[in-house]
Length: 601
Image 1 (tube, rainbow, N blue to C red):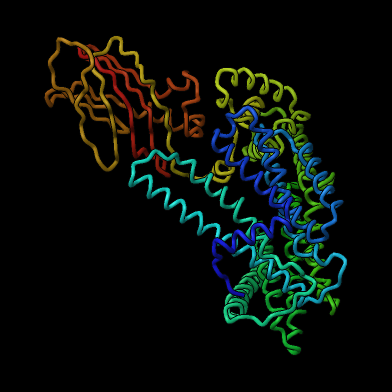
Image 2: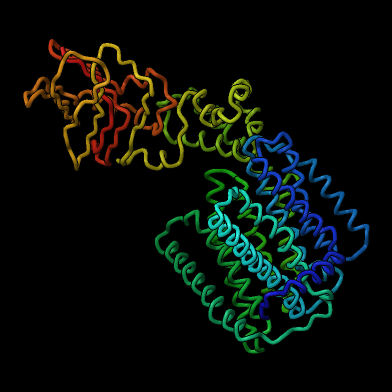
């Protein structure tokens, strides 16, 4: 099957023909494109109708594949009304797009995938096609998608290049937002219509074609070797687990999923190439997949037992169950039909996304229960509580907040949620986007600082870190005559001349040298003072609060004072203010940045 770049006349003719065949799908694509282009133009969240427009865009984008799949079943208007009602219901069950609820968009992607998967089997929902005929239709859908993506990219690249050239040559003021708007326009108006135009009009009459040389090379010498490579890696790792009696790593589940996708794709692409003698290898492949799903079950089961359910673990588990079932089906039934592979996968996606047993409902309930239990068991909480406990609580609060919003924590820590919402309302009135990240706020209210995964995994390891606390642009210079920018680099040490910023009767030449051990003040090569800084820097390096906080600009002035050092004698008075400290993995200082206020008596 070859790809030919269409002419303008062909595109227009195909567009009107396609519009007659898939009117609601194309209207959905056009509405989605227009709304997204508008939201880009008005800078999204700043628009008062942002949430409403985003929800409409999500609904209409879902309609692209849904109306396509329904139209492939029949041109009966009742199906169109069913689709419209479904989208209206979807609009009203969408939550408000305010807190960072990641599942809204993740669920939308899976529902879009569900309706796209339906395109593969809806033409045959009441028929019993041969595997060869079904694969012919499947190829048509795949190549229609690939060709539409390729042509969309080419058109976008060409037009955006022309816009850039025009802007550069004629010095035109063209805003950067025109490029994403152009991409959305080309995708929504051309990409979707071209994809739908390439779908055969009568799938039930398709006949198997002879593979081209490119298709044979891709199937035999690219796709199959990749599948074999995955097979070798996975089974070598399985033998390692058996021989060493170790538990499988968490990433194994995703690798098995990837192998399964590649293996099933290779299986399908071999459809016209199977010989009667070679068909026994089809059953071997099903057996290989079946055995790997057992290993997948062990890997995901261990993660769930230790950390509970999340929507990601749920998806891996339900895909593993699907793989086990479909492998068993193709292994036991010689007349197994390809269409059940796609129908069953569509059903699995539907179960995982909708209803009380969806991945999101199960994940939320599981993490809420774990968090409640851990909070009760770990009281009282403080900065000295075991870091594993602090990390697990931080991680669960972060997971629930990111995926389900602050409301998901209301039943667990109601007072903290109420306090945060009140503070957020007060802050938003002053600055709409400057309120504090809830997990940080919640853990601090519980008695400890938020612990991320990196900190937990490396808490007992020596590692490089830095402290950064920018100084105010308005310094209190009362009582001093000079300001000195001080720097220390382990590789380069060089005395710096003071920067005079106040009137002074003294005309002196003074140099300053700072090291992790001393601050040396010299006047005309004579040492005025050699001040030990060992205790000062030691107090900084051993302060857990300072070590854990990379950006200290949010800390209190009391904490800031820990980075200041004052000294005075009968000759000089100075104040050292450190704003950056870089420490290597052995705990040795390799860089110092600071300012020095100085007065000579």
